[in-house]
Image (cartoon, rainbow, N blue to C red; front, side, top):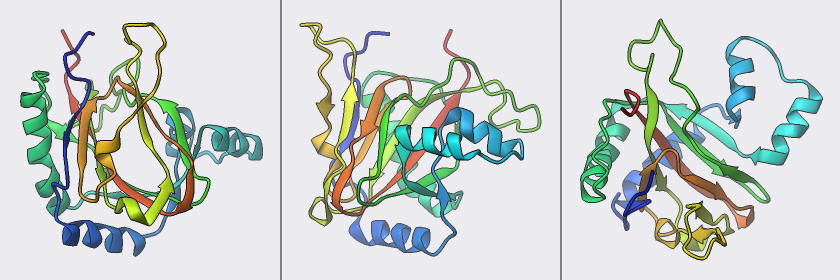
Length: 212
């Protein structure tokens, strides 16, 4: 799918106090090891990861997460998702936001190249909010100030460069505290390793019926 805009951003949109409140709340909750698709499915089905699987996971992703479903957080962020969807001209139909993922990236932690959408819709007959739907819009909120960590660059790979080089593009707009970046969930991206400090972020995936 060719797009005019592959992401839309709002610099320092969320007030610092709200960012600090989210960090404080996240740090008060029990952390979990951040997973990727296949490993996450195994945990949901009640199985434990083997040592080899944990080692394999660490090659793809190293970070800790807390899941949040608090209404006050959605209230702060969802208006920007709607605005980005309109301003960028995507106009994707979506009607549900998944749980917020509060993520802590400490020294040497990262998340390698990935996209947030899957190859088929959710198969969750007992969850009417997500069953049969796909991730359409992803949003990342930077909770940390850019002076509080080094490294941890958020990069996009649009896979459509004119010269065919497919060079990653650093999303500098996300670094200021309270900044929001919204992008289609099929766009590839990564978080490079943090080299000092701690990077806190909040991610929300937003669902709708499959594209027609």
